[in-house]
Every structure is written in structure tokens, then in C-alpha cells.
Image (cartoon, rainbow, N blue to C red; front, top):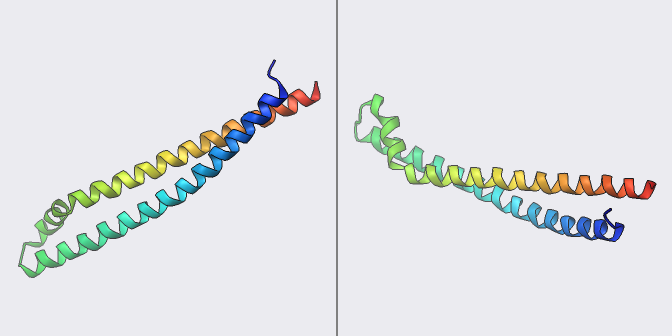
Length: 109
């Protein structure tokens, strides 16, 4: 049987990881938003340049996206990193919930 002291120690550790993960998630959300902003601004610039050069309208979208592909990659990576951090945060929350349940069960015995 798990000792109550071990449960409390695990809950404390998980709580610290939860706090750290929350701060990390905020930073990743900020980076996600920034990479999205940069990508959209540069895409719009490329579209404007291609239009001013007389590029056929049917080609503008593909050519513009091709020229800012690296920014799209960074945007997508930032999005996936954010989602991964969110999943980690949810896993820690689940762990805390399980520990709380075990603690309540231990108290009732």
C-alpha cells in the first residue's frame, strides 16, 4: 500500500511541474501567435509583390506560399509544440487528480 507521505510528496512534485508547465504553455502560446503573425504578414507582402509584377492571378497563391514556406514551417512547428505542451499539462492534471483520489481513499481506510 502506498504511504500517505509518498502521496503528498508526489502531489507536491506534480503541483510544481504543473506550475512550470503552465508558464511554459504561456510562452509557447505567445510564440505560436507571433509565428502566425509573421507568416501572414510575409504572405501578404509576397502576394502584393507578385500582383505588382503582373503574375497571373491563378499562380499568385501557390507562388507566394512557396516563397514563405520556411515561415509556414515555423508556424506549424510552433502550433505543434503548443499542442504538445497542452497535452503534457493535461497529463499532469490527470496525475494530480489520481493522486487526490488515492489520498481520499487512504483517508477513508
